[in-house]
Every structure is written in C-alpha cells, then in structure tokens.
Amino acid sequence: MRVIASSIRKGNVLEQDGKLYVVLSAENIHPGKGTPVSQIEMRRISDGVKISERYKTTDQVEKVTIEERNYSFLYEDGEGFHFMEPETYDQVQVAKDVVGSSAPYLQEGMVVKLSMHDTTAVAITLPQRATLEVVETEPVTKGQTASSSYKPAVLSNGVRTAVPPHIGTGTRIVVLTEDGSYVERAKD
Image (cartoon, rainbow, N blue to C red; front, side, top):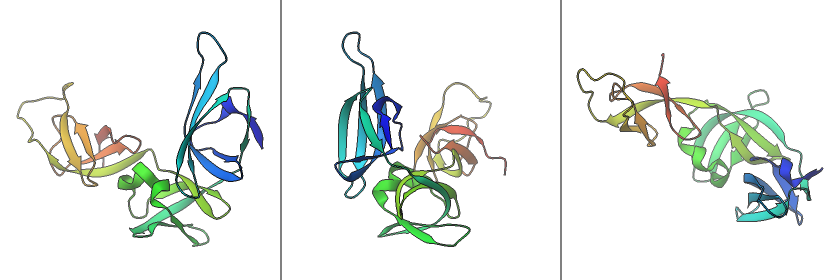
C-alpha cells in the first residue's frame, strides 16, 4: 500500500528494494526555507542493519500491512525470546534485536502485542506499565516527606531509575516500560 512519507510512524513496516524495514523513528522536518522532509530511521528485518532515509513529505513509500496479535511471554534463551499465542498455543520466537531495549521489562506471562508479517515478528509493544521491586536504594530519611528531589534506585530487572525519598529497598513500584521512570507505589 503506497502512502506519503509524512504519514509514517514508529513501528510501521516499509518495503524498499524488495526488503522489509521496521521504522525506529520518524520525524517531519519543516525548515524555514525549502521543502519539508521526513527523516526516517529504519532497521532491516532480515539482518538487523540500521539505515536512515530522508524523503520529501509528499514522496510515496510502500507500507506493508502488519497483523497485530496478543502473545504471552514464556522465556528467553540463547536463540531469542519465546512467546505463545493464548488461543491457539502457537509459539513464536522473536530475535533479540526486535525486542531491543524492552527486554528488561519482560516478565513471565506478560501479555504483549507482537506485530507480525507472515510468520515473522517485526515489532513488539509492551504494556505501558510494569510492577517491579526496588532492590537497592539509599535508606529512607526519617521525617523526609515527598519532595521534588528523587534518589537513584536499582530495580529487580537491573534497570536504574529515580524514586521519591520515601521509597525504600523491597518496595514494589510501578514504572513506565518506555523509559523506566517511576509512576507510583504498587497497590498489591
């Protein structure tokens, strides 16, 4: 399906020269003079090579139709990450470079959205939030209320983040999977 370059978004899959590319970032640039352009960073699905392309915003690009389905995360091994389709119990293996920076947030049984082209997973979308435990942080200072100063903390998945002063080691917190930032104390 041919679409104009300015409509391309992160996660879309494009076909170029007979190869499939997943869009990592897409930015529309409108300079003061000259023609507006779309700067698109892509990763070739077959071998993981990253490329950056610049199109005029009105250029036509070939967008591939992708099917999005929910899958449950099973486990990770040397070959990649393994997911299962809950209704048919079909298992699919996803390469490490497709999962990328989302890997630390994957938890057993977590339901994710996989973008599939034929039988190949080309992109993954995690739930917006994940609940993790703080395994290392400075001790709670007595009498200190929630202030604007955050302190560093290490979560159970190894990710470093910043938490409010009242959060101590062993506390379960909710973080955004996009960047690992603190949202709230877990309610469980």
